[in-house]
Image (cartoon, rainbow, N blue to C red; front, side, top):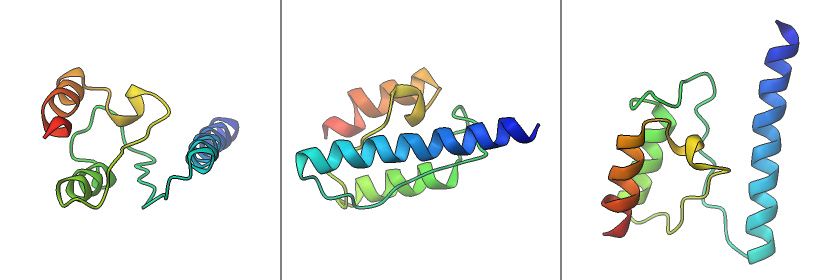
Length: 89
């Protein structure tokens, strides 16, 4: 049980570091890091996901960067809604 928790924490830390490095290589400023650790990716009411969407809608963010699509959401309807509708506005 303990090993699983450590693996999960390490995985999140590795993702953050990988994305920080990606931004650094491109000279992109990181506005904030949004992490809903402990929530399912299918959950639409994740607090940090809601904060991310609010910051996008208020123009604080130009790019949403994720390790892969499932890190944004595991709900294909939500992904389609934002990639093909909201984020194109």
